[in-house]
Each structure stands twice: as structure tokens, then as C-alpha cells.
Image (cartoon, rainbow, N blue to C red; front, side, top):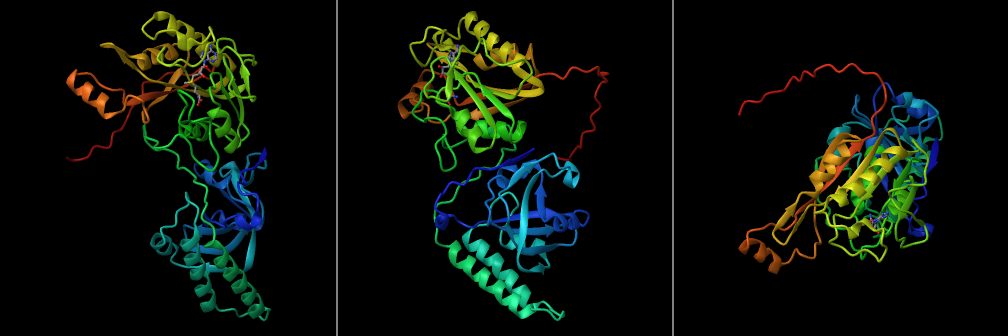
Length: 418
Ligand SMILES: C[S@@+](CC[C@H](N)C(=O)[O-])C[C@H]1O[C@@H](n2cnc3c(N)ncnc32)[C@H](O)[C@@H]1O
């Protein structure tokens, strides 16, 4: 499957910022990169690669020989390719390359990249890109062109091209943010959205922070996969999936936009085993009045058993439509109201685990809560209760049916002296 990116955000070509991107290879893979004229990398760098635009600058770092090769241009947009089987399918995030003039080889790569703080998981922008290009020009001057070719001509062309790029890179200010994938089980996002376009509607009561879905999508799906959100609200899941090149279907009992279909999440109109990921940010009880719809599960109190029984129907449907081995992410928060604490998250976790196998639990910081004011903080201290500071993102997987022998696990801990 070759998925082309459509992430070109700025229509007017003159306003598109040229960025640089660093790829890595080893001595084993270097030849394949140059023979195929393709740079490639693994999924962890997927969010970066699918945003590469034709014309962006590319560099290749051989980590075995400590050399960087340049300067290359992207001859295609970045794409996902698992079917051609190149690079042993280990590096499916790829871009086609062309050289900008003669290929230049710069030694002491590690030192240079460290000094410029250039990393593979970030685009190289403006001043930094200019400095890296200068490094290549300086190296080229020192290079010994011995062959009787049009060396000086091609070198001049290279200089001209590099100068032109350097002059153009400083002019534009807008740059798309490419968020890093979270590494720990604590996520704290200062804003609801990311990137240059809105994700969902941040005025919708109970809107989901888009980076939660972004992280789920990049951890558990590939470009082209199908993601379903049965309680889609203002459509955050659809917008994130579109930007990250996934297919998405969003339902809600009370749709807020045309691309969300009206449907009760307890009965999803999709075939068994047909979906690559389900994401749900369900009501947490009856604390928010979403709409007048009588079938809205958000009309039921999370202090009642009925709330969990109805959500369990949504869990069963999600399990039915998911392919084996695929993942469901469920965002949920606890409740404290009128001196009564209800551990909604743990109760949902319990129910989920009777259908799925656990993958992990993420603690998501609750920002922008209406109760997060000085007055409420003071009340919480005076009357000895807590304001809700976090939500759970419960990640579970539909089991794969195969006969496995369950052996007790032996863990060899690395123990450190205190
Ligand atoms: C927390 S909101 C989802 C927010 C959404 N992820 C977003 O970013 O805008 C929960 C949603 O569940 C929907 N909902 C409640 N009961 C439902 C049901 N039975 N079937 C489908 N959707 C339902 C509500 O209408 C509401 O939009």
C-alpha cells in the first residue's frame, strides 16, 4: 500500500517553507538508499515523514561511518509503503530523493548534528538549516574533485542552488507543528488542538484533546487504516485521522456536522472484524448536558449501575467490529459530587477487561476544567475534597485467537545500587 500525503497546508507555493529532514542509515543499508533513490525509516518517525513535501531538503547520516551525505531534495511527498518489500519491510516510511548538484560527504556527523541540535524527529528549520547548508558548502570547497568532469560548473550550480534556498528559508514564519509521540504514561497537553487546522470544536462541551487521538493513532494504526469513533461529538477523531492519513468513521447520537452519522453506539452498523482502531471519549456520567436526545447515555448518572450496563453494550459492539489484535482507547474521568466519590474510571476498566485484554492506562492531565478556579481550589482545601486533576485513557486489545501455551514469565531485573 502506498499512501500519499495530502498534508500540504499552504496552497500558494511561494509561501511554503522549505524544511530539512535528517534520515539515518547503516553501512548495510546505505547502498540500498542510493541505488533505489529512496530514504526510509521506521514508524516512530512516521508523523515526520508523512509531512515531507516535494522540494524539502534531505540529508542522510550513516551512523556506522559517522558521515552525513547531502544535499538532496524530496522528489516525492513522504509516503507509507509496506507492499514493495524494500528495506526488508523494516522501514516503510519513505521518500524519493534527487541530488542537489554533486553529492557532498561531511565527516564528524555526530559532532556537527549535536552542535546544531539537529535530530531525526524534528524538521530542520530556517537558521539551523542555513547553518547545515553552510557546513556542506564548506566541506565541498575542501573536497578534492579529481575527475575531469564539469566539476566547477556543477559546483557553481550547487552553490547557486544552496544560496537560493538559504535566501528563501528565512522569509516565512508559519510552520506546522509536528508533535512528538508521548513516551510515558502521563500526558499533559496545554492546548486542545495541534497543527494549522482545528481538530473538532474546542467550544463543544466535553471536546477531546486532539493529541490524545494523535498519540493513539500513531501508536496503534498505520496510514490507510480505519478508525471508528462511535461517540464522535464535535468530530475531533475525524479531523485527526484526516491529517494523519487514516480513514475515519464518526457516529454520534446527536451529530454536530455532516460527516458524522447519526447512530446509537450500542448498535454500530459495521461488519464484524472490520476496524483497525476504536476511540471513545464517552460521557463520564450526567455532569454535562450534551443534547436533548433521550438515548444519550450522558443522561444517566454514573452513580447508577445502569450507566455501566449501557456503556458495556458499547464495549461489546466495539469488540465485535474490531479486528483481532486491534486496540480500543477509552477516555474516562471519575466523579466527585455532593460529598460522594465515584471511581468511574476503575469501574469502566473492570467492565472493559471482561471483553478485552489490557494494554496500558494513561493518566491524562485535566486542563481547562470549569471548576479549576481559585474559588473552587479554596473550597477543595477548606472542605477537604479534591478537584479532578486527571482522566484515564484506558487502552485495551481484542485478543487474537490462537492456542498459546501459558508459561510463567521470568523477569531478570536490572538492579541498581542506591
Ligand atoms: C465526551 S463527548 C465526545 C467528544 C468528542 N470526542 C469530541 O472531541 O468532540 C461524548 C459524546 O457521546 C455522545 N453520546 C452519548 N450517548 C450516545 C449514544 N448512545 N450513542 C452515540 N453517541 C452518544 C454525546 O452526544 C457526546 O457527543
